Image 1 (cartoon, rainbow, N blue to C red):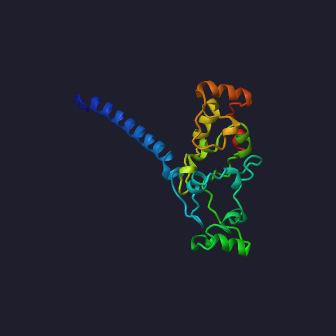
Image 2: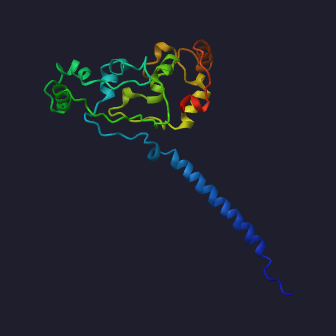
Image 3: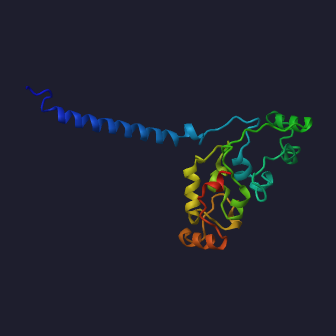
Length: 216
């Protein structure tokens, strides 16, 4: 009986198997890159706001402390969005007739809050508490980036679970003195490899990676 397959069939079958595996690996890698991309995470994307507020001007230029606007960041799970009255405290005197700030004046006159769009918006199934992170020495800059250099606010990091876990697993790499939590451009006075473990012990920081810590 004659041979059905040629001698090269074995080589072709092996090559096809490796080709399929290679294709699947390529597709898997592409999906992984896509899932971490700015397109999916919304990182580095600006959002249209009722007033294009510049953190670069207010924080970097004037030197306003984060807590002046985000008043509840030290005591609440949310940092808080400032009411229009906070803006009017200054802008009743400064740029008080600027057409650019008419939405702010209108909001104050009509007693209707401005509809700001949340930039750092975690999913509903994720619980994040600002106050505990501040208490444990995690700087605003660590999550939000150098807002003092952002003319328009953007999401600096992916906010994906692997990004959060990197900090939860290695808190000594990110912790800073509580007095420096609100400092932009913070540089540790000593090597972070020496300072980090000291602060982790002093602030009693645990490496919390249990699902129930964030998913409640």
